Structures are given as C-alpha cells and as structure tokens.
Length: 414
Image (cartoon, rainbow, N blue to C red; front, side):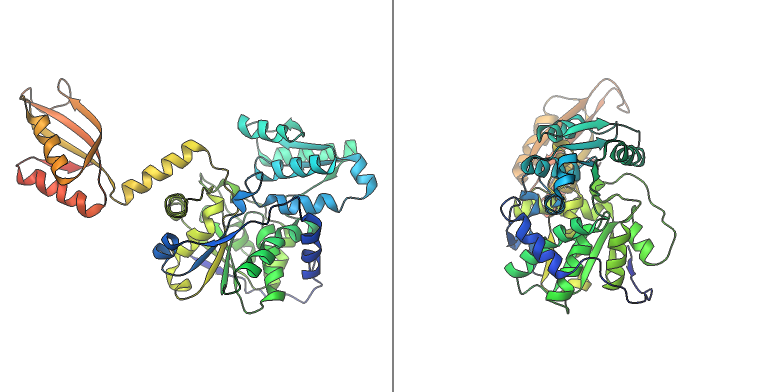
C-alpha cells in the first residue's frame, strides 16, 4: 500500500473548470438529478475509528454519480447539436446516465458498448431509449468505433470524464456535500478517469481551501497516481472495483489534480471488499466496488484520518447480486463468523449427532455438512466430516473448537 504525492511543479495555467461553472451546473441539473443525502453512520464510524460522512450518490436513478456530468453536458448542447444527437462509449454507469438524460432532454442517444458487456447492462441502457451498438473486444476498440460513428453521423461525443462540462457536473456533488456537512475536514474521492475527483477538488479549493482532497485508486490500476508522479502507466488484473479500473485517465482531470496538489491513495482489493461489506451490513447501503473505494481508503490509512471528520461518496451502487453475496460471505469468513472445520471421526453410530449437539451447546449453527464415508478417509473404520458453521464472533468460534478438542475430537480449520 502506498500513497503518491502530486509534487511535480507546473507553470500556472488558466483553470479549465471553475467554481462558477460548477454552480451553474448545479442550477442546470436541478430537478433532473437527485440531491442525494449525506449521512453519518455509527457502525461505519466505529470501524473507521473516526467520523465519516457518506454522500449517497448510489441513490441516483441509474445508481451512480455519472448522472451529474451527463445531465450538465447535455444541457450545454446547442440547438444544432441537440438535433444531431449524442454518442458515448461506456460499459457501465456513464452509458445509462447519458441514455437517461438524453431521453429526458428529447435528444437521440447512441451508446457504443464492447461485445463482452453483460446483457443486463445492455438492456438497462436500451430501457432509457438509447440505441446500443455492440462493437469491439475491448473498451479501446469500442471507443474508437464511437469516435468513428461520431464523425460519420455528425453526433456529439460525450466523454465520460475528459470534458469540462462533465467535470463541472460531477463537481456538484462536492457543493452539496460541503453544504450538508460543513464540519468535514478531508474529502476522499474514488478516481477512474478522474472527472469526479477533479470536480470535487475544484469546488473544494474555492469553497474550503484548507480541506485536502484525496483521490483513491485500487493497487492494480494506479494510472492517475503514476501520471501525477511522472511514471509510466502500468495497470491490469482483476478487480472488484471495475468502475475505476482505468488505464487512460483524462488530461483535464490530470491537470486539475496537479494544480490542486491532490494526493492519490492506493488501496488493496481486500480493503474494497471490506468496505462493500461494511456499508451493506453496517450502514444498510449497497455499493459497487468503485463506490466503496473512498471508504476503503479511510480503512486502509487509519493514521492519516484519525481525529479528522472525513467525507466520502458512495458514488455507485450497481453491483452484481452474486458478487455482493460473495463479498459478504468472504467477509464473514475473515471476521471468523463463518468457520469451515474438518474432522476425521470414527465410523460408528452417534458420533455425528454428538458433534452436532456440542456445536449447539456452544451456540454455533451448522449451515453445511459434507459427510464422506466411502472415499478419502484414511481407513474403513473412519470417515471425513466437513462442516460450515455460523458463530457470532471469532471468540465463540475459538470456544467451539476448544469444546471439540476437550471431547478428544481432532479438528482443523479449513
């Protein structure tokens, strides 16, 4: 785990996005984008070891903050551009945001998505009235095709993050958050292409210049951190935070974060999973991996945020149900609230019932049993028993194992 400082000196340049742009964006999108709540949750505070305010942009109609930038950019179209229509490339939240706000504005929208895009995302995007074109095996190929269609059909290309209008729209999140929770002393914002963090840094630098704005990337995709440090970009690998798994960050966001001297914190996959689980179980908030990355940074760097009031955004909640269930189960295992135990037991009547009773006496709950008599056991006089057991905490799990060993059962954790 590491943090990379934006320390490369830059000659002063005119800002590409200003507070006035962000305030104007807030007026444009009022009524079409939800002003989401900013909440504080005791369970999250207890685990984080400090006060944390959560900006719930997962409650937007399409489940993510991307609506802010899309709505503002569409509102900036000229009459001629509105007549021509718009095009965007995305396999995720930007696609639905552009589709929805184009429909609301009465503008034709085309969305280019890679061929591997899950059918559910295609259907949701089409449900907002967009024409979906599936092209290419990678995001880069889909993007190239979108630019080609833009030129061929005269469509306005709406970039997901490298656009002043989009960045200004994303910055409205910070306006709301700082107004609703003025006690915030640091902001922690996930970075994919950088539009949200750049908009937040711009707004914060003018409204509350003493507040640091930290960007967050997962360790496998530290593109913004590497660009800020002047290093070659090297990214890759599977991640639950696919919404911020970006290789090519925006040049406008890069310049803004460089001018604002923003710092990027890198978080491991396990911290993102912990944050997703904590939000679901503790705050009753559903977050996708990218949406939980800000909280993951607070959990990963406790010394940095101790005794500081922190603000972060749950910027998206579009997580696959199976992925969410897997994250929750993995966290239960890590917390010791689910145990996998393996026994070699004598093959005689009553042993299985005795083990079950001893588990019950300690307060454990058996949720899965695998009893192997014919194959795998060391002798025909013994059998293998594999149990998955639910306990309230690790201490109860230790007590359960102690009870088994006191009864002369040989047990090992799996």
